[in-house]
Length: 97
Image (cartoon, rainbow, N blue to C red; front, top):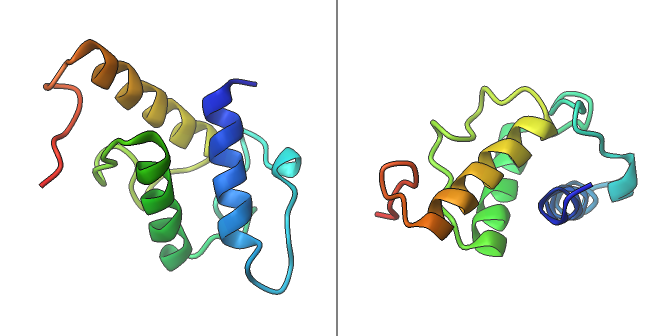
């Protein structure tokens, strides 16, 4: 498991564990869906903000939006944005507005 994946799982666990139940990051799998994790729209927004802050990136809805199917897709999108940021590829990395 990559560092990015571990950090994203920790963010997800933290954001959804503030409710009645808690989840261990190790229980979150790449193929875990938002439905599996009982993540609602408002929780997804909070998770996206936390990921942006953690990695100093901007997640446009086109990159990771409300149509994301699983945690692995989130990790892939974040990895792509980090790579684009590191190479300075402005075309692949949306600018904050």
